[in-house]
Amino acid sequence: MSTAAMTAPISAPREDKSGFTRDRAVWGAIMLAPYVLVFAVMVVYPVAYGLWLGLNWNSYRALFADPIFIRTVVNTIIFLFVAVNLKFLIALLLSGFFVQQRAWIRIVLVLFILPWAVPSIPTILSFRVMLNPENGMVNQQLFQWFGVMEGPGWLTDPTLAFVCSIFVHIWKSLPFWTLILITGRLAIAQDLYEAASVDGANRWQQFRFITWPSLATLYVTSTMLSMIWTLGDFNSVYLLTGGGPGDLNHVLATLGIRYMRNNNLDLGIASIIVAMPLILPMVFVMVKRLSKGAEA
Amino acid sequence: MKKVLDEGKLILIAIPVLIWTLLPIYHLFVLSISNQESMLAGKLWPDQPTLQNFQIVFKQQHYYLHNFWLQMFNSFFIAVATGLITLFVATFAAFAIARLKVKGGRTIMNLALATYLIPAAFLAIPMYKAMGSYGLLNTQASLILAMVALASPYAIWVLKQASDKLPKELDEAAVMDGATSLQLFRLVYLPLMKPSMVVIGIYALLLAWNEYLYAFLLLSSEKAVPLAVGLGLFLSADDAPWNLLMAAGLLYAIPPAVIYYGFRKNMVGGLTSGAVKS
Image (cartoon, rainbow over all chains, first blue to last red; front, side, top):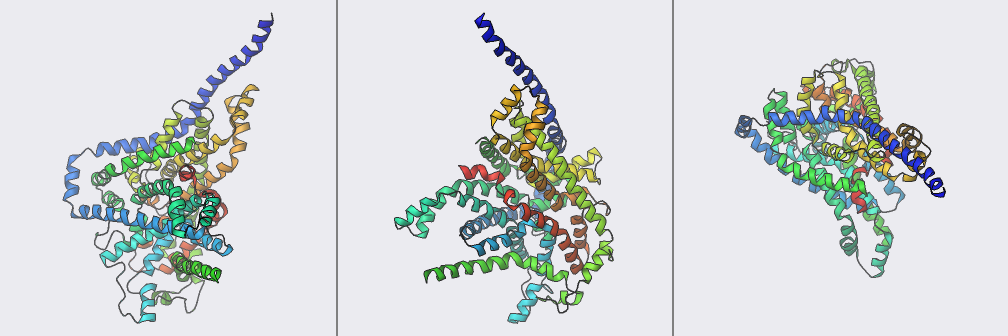
């Protein structure tokens, strides 16, 4: 009798629970469905179709025969290496500046994030006009201040134009990464620094033994994410130079789109598939890192 | 004395940083209030600042700006639709993965994250092709769908992280009281997730408002394109009226800048926060 009385109230919620589990599975599937549909239609099918088109061996032969392509691969590697490392070096230094507790520095920070907050098209086109070799503001001012009759051909000289597009890319993406590194620095316990300065550690030693070890993981994760995004940056190159002068300054992102706009989809697909050996390992590592982050 | 020296050093860093950051934006502003003549002279400040460019833009009195207001409206419509649909798709998915623990949910989230990590310009090419086979090219639906697909992975990821922070006991208590999954969603989950949902909705909205590449690929009719593409048309002109472009560009850039500043604190960090913690 007493056992029955004890089990009865326990078994009732147990039934509820299994009922709920079924309800849960059904609604879980229904609620996940919209995303799965978007994912299938917009990502899985296009990527699978792209890979299938990418099996066409002839397009790679045509690709490697195109002199612009080899130049583009070299450009892309230089762009990635210089832009990402330079950006993170500057972001690392600037994050040290911005964590200083001053009211006026907070105001500087608010202005500093503007490039990140505004859309690319007006600002990059503003660069383009400003750097115009003939009547752009930069060369006109060089003439007025320093009497330079013929200022540098910022966008007409191939090397300079390439350097400029790297700078525009950094201009646009620097604020975001600086903010990330500021967040990282603010997470470091302040008493570590206090203890270190009591022990007589100088600025460099504090950076070397406290800041850097605490920031290293974040720095590496961010660098990798930034590499992937930099590889996909079309705007900085296209809006500033259009890949020119003379198609000398394309990166894979702009070249792929250029092929496609010229109705040469196979070459467009091939030109992005050649980057896969670089991208896939990074995507794999990043997904692992990020899903671990989501777990924590 | 040392303090003054320190402050001096900081100011020496601040000045070049500000010049570097603000120069192109200042230049954008200067051109927008310059007439053709002082624009071509590359002046630091126009001789006779004028609001005439804005007047021309407002009244659509230039060949390139005939559809300015329509394109502004298109930008607005595409951004709001992207924001709302992303919110709908991502909130449901995050609830199913984080709270209902639906089977395969984690795998789907990881696959979604992988999408987020495909370089944007690379995904654009096969997506364009797919839009062609769906017969959606040159419709705004194609751009909205593309933007939802690009915004959802991050949105789900952020919402999943926020959901995990909600106490499990809430769900358990509700289930004990006999709540169904739907009631759990409506009465427990939604009210608690509101702040994260606002951030995600705005993130998706801004992503769509600022997008250029996908818009430029997927839409071509002058009446259907958002303002970003409308402004990009100036690129094809031999002697483009850059001052008009800059005036229109300024109007296009102000709304997202205002929104960013309003939500600045919530917009950073997300993806790398896992790395900050470890």
